[in-house]
Length: 170
Image 1 (spheres, rainbow, N blue to C red):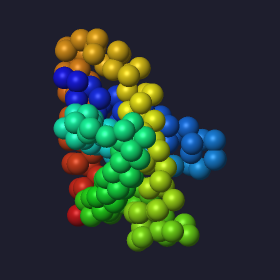
Image 2 (image 1 turned 180 degrees about the horizontal axis):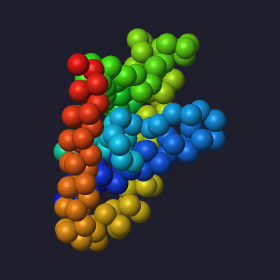
Image 3 (image 1 turned 60 degrees about the horizontal axis):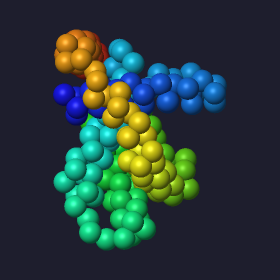
Image 4 (image 1 turned 30 degrees about the horizontal axis):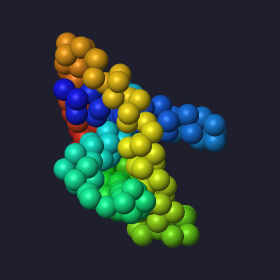
């Protein structure tokens, strides 16, 4: 349940974060492709971080400084790849570009921006060392029934998103 809760919570928090940034910047745009408040690229990014921490980062036997540098560089690359993959999936499945970095100086295509790659690495390190310990206390006490309820709602949202938004492309 831990990974499912993490996916759902961080997809929701990603939606809240992006919507807030859009509101502050007076950009009238919806964060995510779903009908509900979920931006799943953040959920998948967090799952990648959690799995790498469990199976890779926690097993490193190097100084704390080198470990942080390694984690930073690894997460910058992996999270950038997830963003690239997510952008391509959304474009190919829904014919929509939720983000497009061609106006940025250091972009590689539409979905990769090296400036943001460095930010993703930083956010990843901050997540592991600051946010995760706090959020784990919350995630670990969420009742199983609540997790299953919200997952069921997410599955319904996913179904309707796929049916109605892909149907519009045909």
